Structure formats: structure tokens, C-alpha cells
Amino acid sequence: MAMSGGKEDGSPMMEMNTTPLIDVMLCLLIMFIMSIPVATHSIDIDLPVATPPTDTPPPIDPVKNKIVLTQDSKIMWNGTQIDQGRLVQTLEATTRMNPEPELQFQPEPEASYDLSAQVLQVIKASAVTKFGFVGNEQFATFGK
Image 1 (cartoon, helix red, strand yellow):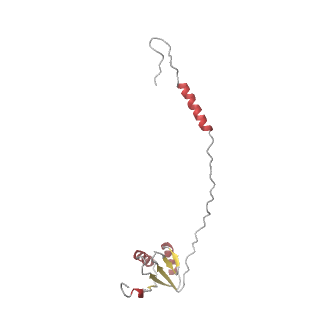
Image 2: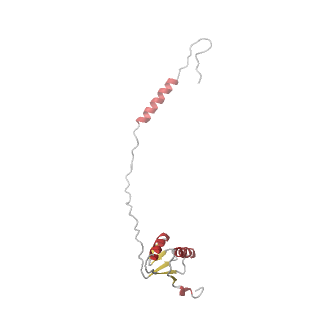
Image 3: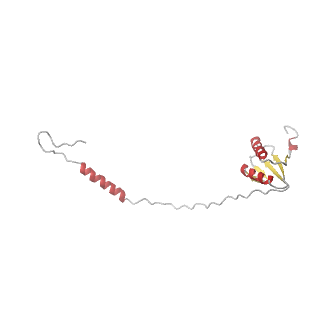
């Protein structure tokens, strides 16, 4: 910014110098902003208490266990619904048992073929030695 000392003819400057006024206004603005109380509006909400998930494994029968795939893509272990991660853990537990229990695989007629392939891959990867397909008689005639 350039400063002017007046006109060339030696007459005094008649305009008001607003720079100090602006400085004082900015200082007052900052002081007012700092003096405003903090907004402490709060709404009390009663949140539900989280219950820890029950990680109880499905029961393992020491003689034979049955995996059923339902038509709504659920994996059932002896009638208890499990996911693929729990299936892997359960199969590993059965392979450590002595003697190893028999594992039966029975998909429902309208079960997902993709889910069947995934579960069979999990069973194969778990190195189960006693494995069998049950309920194949329902598919004895094609298009029934």
C-alpha cells in the first residue's frame, strides 16, 4: 500500500486515515468471537447395551455329523445354522478327534449349486477322511 503525504501543492490531506479504525474493529471482532459461550446443546439418548456374541460352537457328535444346505443358502450342522468360518473351525475339531466321526453331506433339492461347491471345497481342504453323500435317492430320477 502506498502512503500519501498530501497533494503536490502543499495543502494538508483532508481524507480520514481509516487504517487504525479497521485495526480496532478487527480487534473488537476477535474479542467478541472469543467471548461467545460455547454451544453446549446436548440431547441425551439411551443407547442399547451391546451383548457379546455367543461364540458357542455347534455340538459335535462323536459318531456322525450331518451338513445340510437349505434352499435359502443356509449351512446347517446337525440342525444348527453356522457360517463358513465356523464350518472350517468345526471340521478342524472333528479331524482332531479319535476316532474321527463320519461326516454326511446332504443338500436340499433346491439348494444353491455355488454354495454346495464352496462347502465341498471347504470339506476337501479340511482333510476329512470319513465323508459321504446321503439322500441321493431323492435324485434317482431326473426331472422329478
